[in-house]
Image (cartoon, rainbow, N blue to C red; front, side, top):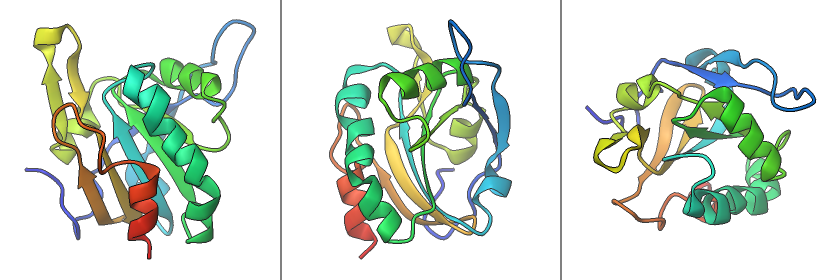
Length: 167
């Protein structure tokens, strides 16, 4: 069943790397989604994969460009989640000049995607199970906004849309 507005955010553990060695990100740390959203307002957007064209050229920039306005509306953190490992997510975040601004979290085995009911099976395209493209707002662990994209679309999950929903 797909998560909906009013539901508690699905339990799960995501991977986050925030430190870098000479050649690559250092070992990821676990992030307990329910614990990390407790008592906070968090904007989360999900993409099918790091380094993919729409995700890199449009989705991440839409949140970077709206970051100050989102924070002015009370958003404590912005998360980008993809079905990649924490190392890849950190490298991508660094390449997007977004580390320290947006948290880049990996759902490498798509367990959280499945818990949300927002998995996307791209096995036939040699990409495995991924997250659907979406955005949501979590307030103290409860989903208060949810925007799920149609297949191949980027129309309702960008930073502009979520910002407009904050009033």
